[in-house]
Each structure stands twice: as C-alpha cells, then as structure tokens.
Amino acid sequence: MNTNIRYLPIIYCLLLVAAAHASEPVEKLYATHCASCHGADRLGGIGPALLPENLDRLRPPEASRTISEGRAATQMAGFAAKLNKDEIQALTNYIYIALPQTPVWGNNEINASHIQYGDSATLSDQPVFKADPLNLFVVVELGDHHATILDGDKFEPVTRFQTRFALHGGPKFSPDGRYVYFASRDGWISKYDIYNLKMVAEVRAGINSRNLAVSGDGKTILVGNYLPHTLVLLNADDLSLIKTISTIGQNGVSSRVSAVYQAEPRGSFIAALKDVKEVWEISYGEQKSDWQQSFDPAAADMMVWKRTFPVRRIIVDDYLDDFFFDSSYQHLISTARDSKKGLVLDLDTGKKVADLDLPGMPHLGSGISWNYLGHPVMATPNMQEGTVSVIDMQTWKTIKHIRTPGPGFFMRSHENTPYAWTDGFATMNPLSRDTMALIDKNTLEVAQILRPEPGKTAAHVEFTRDGKYALVSIWEMDGALMIYDTQTLAVIKRIPMCKPSGKYNVYNKITRSTGTSH
Image (cartoon, rainbow, N blue to C red; front, side):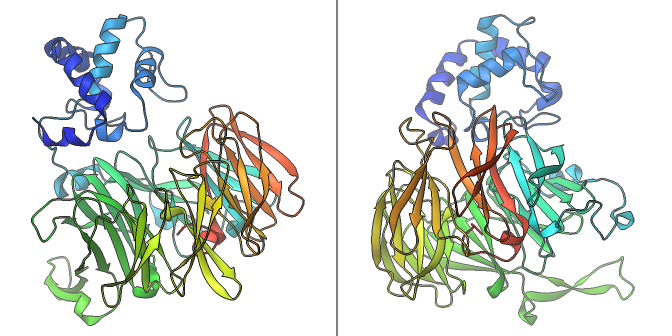
C-alpha cells in the first residue's frame, strides 16, 4: 500500500475502497473527460492537480457537485449532461485516491513550466493609477480564484484579475511593495507587477506547495513543498530556477515542508519541517562563505561568483511546523500543530531557552505582538479552544489566557489601534464563526464582540496604513469586505466579494508591522 495514504483522512480511505471495484472504468472516464485539462497523471495542466494532498480544502460532496455543475468564472464545465450520477461519484472517489508512486517534479519539470509574460523592461517604473501604492490591499478571493487590488483610501477596486487555483499561505511583497508574489496549492508561483497591473512571470515549483518567502534584499524566492519534499529557490526577477534542495533529515527521513519564512535581520530563510525534528536556516546573505566561484560558459571570464545558499540544521526535541519570531529574529517561537505547548529557540545558539504554555493548538503564524506594561508581549489564537494566549517575551511566561467566543484562526492589530482583533471561525462553530472579538491591549480583556453579518463567517482582519480602518472578511461565496472605523467601530462601507479570505496592506507588510503576520 502507498505509505502516503496514512496522511489522508479516514473518509479518503473509504473512498479508495469504494472506487477500487470500478478502477478500469473510472480510469477510462478520467482519460476521456478530465485528462486534457488536469493531466493524464492528475498532476494538473490547464486545470489544477487532482490529488488528495491538493484537495484537502475541497470536501468530496463539493467535488462531486463541481464535476456535475462546473465552477463559475473558470474553464471547468459541468458534466451532468454527459455522465450519470454513478459515474460522477466514481470520478469523485478516484481523485481522492493517492497515486501509487510519488510523482517526480524536479529541475527539468520546473524549468519546462516557466512562463514569462512580455518584456518586463518595457514596464513603467511609476504606478499607472492615482492611488497611494503603499496603502493598497491585495485581496485574495478564494470563491472564484481572483485577486483584487483595493485602494485603501477610497476603498474602491483598482483592478481585479484571475489567479491560479487555490492560493495558499498568503501573498508576499518585494521590499519596495511594487511586486506581489502568490503561491497556489498546486505549486504555481506567480509574480504580479502592482504598478503596471500586469502578471510578469509564473513557474510551477512543486506539485503541492505550502507558501513562499521573499528575501530581505528582494533577490530570491524560497518555496516550501509538501509534494515533492523540496525547497525551491527562484530568482525573484523572473522566477527562473536557482536550485532545489531535498528536505531529508539527518536520520535519512524525507520531510514535507510546513512553511518558509524570511528573517531579514539574519539574512536568511527559515524552513519549518513537518516530519523531522529539525529547523533549517538557509542563508542568502553577503558573507563570503555563502558564495563560491563556478564555471559559466555564458560569462566573459568563464568564472562567476554565485550564492550557495548553505543549509544550517538545528536539531530540536519535537516536530515544529508553526513559527513566530521576536522583532530581532534571534528567537523563534514554535510549536507542532497538534501540540498544546510550544518552545522558544535561540537561533544564534540553536538551543531551547524556554517552554511555553499554549493550550489549544496555537496558530503562531497568525501571532502578533505589542508592548504591555513596558514589556513586549506576543499573542496567538488557539484553533481548538476559544482562547487567546498572551506571553511575556522577556520572561517567556504566560501572562493570561483570554477567553473568546470560539477557537480563532487569524489575529491582527495595528500600532495605532487600541484593540487586537481575533475571529472565531477556526472550527466553524455556528455560535462563534460570525464573531470578531476585540481585546483591549492595555487591560487584556475582551472589550467588544462584533458580529459583522450575523450567521455568516467573519474572518481575517487587516488595517489601513494609518490604522484608522479595519477590513473584515465575510468568508462566504456571496461575501464582502466590511470596513470599520477603528475608533467608533462603525461600519462605513460594505464591498461585495466572492469568499474573500486574506487581504494584505502593502505598507504594513513591507514594514513588518507588529500587528500583522510576517
């Protein structure tokens, strides 16, 4: 049996058994109706990859409905007129079965997928619109796989464009905020020029990717993959391949990459590995030891200096796949997603300096920080408990566990606002998924509970550059952005959108605001 099946939910295993009795007809159905868009190997083409690892956000009933009815605003047509209910169900079962062998996606496949859209040298160095380029938002609309560039002063769309299927991990910006980079669940990395409102380049760096990071100097992209088990380094200018790194631990075990981060003060990337007890630091800095001479027939002198991106392995006591950093990036605060505790790692020494009390599967990637009674503190929602944990970042002791209406996933604040905002939709509990709890950063008490649209999921807050307004997502197909005045807490505007998930303010992201994720 394929060992990858141990990663699938039980329902997938049951579907595998159900489909096995009709494997030949199902394979023929797939070849006839699906392969031209999704690839004969199910690795994707015009359409997304149809593998269990890539479909974990799409439940089988929804997949069956998509096969039957199609998907709006995409090339996915409905097959209800061509296939009967049993055939549609058989296809649904089939795409949730793991492949018998781990597919290959290496340098050749990455290079072959590389796309450049025109000559970037012809593009303007000035924005082609009148809005403040540093107070723009990039809004990811998962419902129909689009992104909107939103003016953060007028709260009007500048443009809206189609993205790859199922973006994941949040877009990242170039240091000057001109470019935004997206990673899709299918491994597609896209570079978009905000100034010119044009896609610049794309490349498929993996089959199932988690997220990307942009180096502090803006020259390099790092992509972390679940499938295959690799880190992929790309040239940020055109997304051409620099190198791939297989993520194999010192014990010989191959590991998925949970996430990648950039630590600009250290001149390095940090990789979270899911299946080995190691944290990796990959240097992109200017140290002489990070460079070596190599032969290049295209160079005039035949020898050029190239970055080597050396990997430093930090051995830890547990699997760590979710991170938060202090402002200096010396300390890494981390946990395993299924753990109720965390630890603090000194990245300079590679040693653990503290254990943390984190009760309910914290989402550290959404953690924020602020000053409380003269001390820097960090706060994180917990995805299994209606609790926000507040930790003193000098003593690493828990100051308080703040009760909220339900388990949260995203938490945000801003230097100019008195509240930390956290949602309650992590478990989709009907009693809390429509809430937004506002925690007073001075008293550590829940000061307000908002219900932007009662009965509809409220998620992910982001603030304007000056912190005067907060944008809340109504995470529904007929959803919206709700714009709040952060002083009066009045809704000043509702902008209809199709299942908006994350929205990211250019200035807050490139300045590493303590109120937003990094």
